[in-house]
Image (cartoon, rainbow, N blue to C red; front, side, top):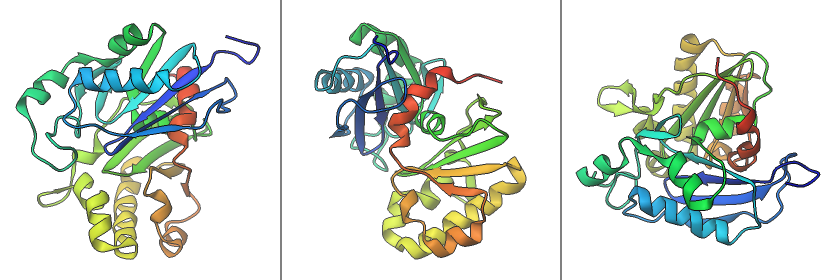
Length: 254
């Protein structure tokens, strides 16, 4: 720790890539972000080893924040959607990986492997920590391999809900409806209309004050669709997934 407060190793674990940097208390990066492809198959020990490998390529830190997909409670993985697949997102699920990840204490494992305090949250929650204003009800939706979400009220983090697995129409989840595979198949214009349909459908569920669209595909939402969505919907940089690693330590639960 120096005069600028603790330095945080912030790691954003996605379905296709894992990126990280070290930041000071103000959220300033002290090294260019490092990115590696997400390795598959990926048992828990494999992700921990990847975290250690990335940390070795970056300046020293005092604590570490890891954002990863799935239902994470108190640093323990209840379920994760991508890392249980044999060859990555949208491939066959491996029963042994499902069993290995269920109940795995990722937070304790990372803390032990790196020898520093660790915080492990859902990746959309970490992303949200980097962008929310802390006023009113704020929903964060990340558009990437699938759909991530996090809800905040007055800056407090609400219990996580895996909206990505809810059905948006018969036999189709939000993940499948607006995930990367469909964006690539449809093209940005038609895919953006689907994003608008999803957001309009969620309005009467959350009655938010603001929605933040993040993740790697948020920038692909067309200007025409963004204009129709209204002023309460804001696109934020994907870099928030790393910057949020600092602010995540100050998040409160309701």
